[in-house]
Length: 288
Image 1 (cartoon, helix red, strand yellow):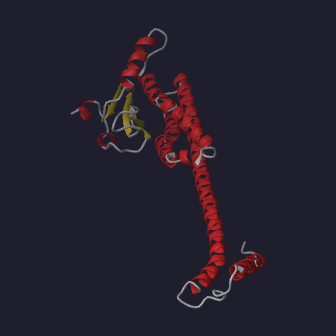
Image 2 (cartoon, helix red, strand yellow):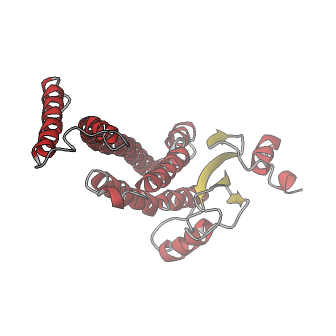
Image 3 (cartoon, rainbow, N blue to C red):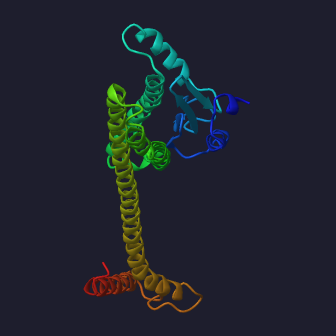
């Protein structure tokens, strides 16, 4: 019934009922139709950063807006109208501009928080100690997810504004066209900033993985150094242990019946000489 009363085209009604319609601007005979995507800005909500499509049908007599979930944008526009009603001419085109401008302004806090998070990660990724890096990869992953979400939300908006200014120039025109051009500039700037943040996050991720690789290499080198020392020590001590083990059995020991410690010190000297020979051999072959 509303479609017939307001003479809304069936294609427009189909787009409105389909929540995930792409962002676009379409010109019809008696109105122009805009799909502009906002998002849930409440960080405590279960649907935080989820897209929310706002549909507007702008006619010469008025404007109709549709959205599938609660959003503060319409309330903000009404408050703005009450504040500026004595200073500007309120028209359907101006209300449509105010609604688009409020949706665009909602991205400013998100972009600011992303900048702080990305700059923090970029500075900390190379200076944190190994014991302090346990949650760095998680922070990088969360920041990258937010950046990619912001890029997805902002990606098509500049094209929508370009199409609105171009295709509806004679209908919108005048001062409203200048305001829409200003919104387009803001959208392009935010999109460029988000693209820059994505590059910083990608670089921080690569630096983090490179630092982890370096630390693992250093740990492996220390382990190899310790194992080399233990191997050398074992190479020297094992032959001595074999010699002492042989004479520790129930067999005749040379010099047992001779008084004095000559044989004892002789055996000690022989084993020491064997150890020295083995050490010199290993050192000559650059094992130690």
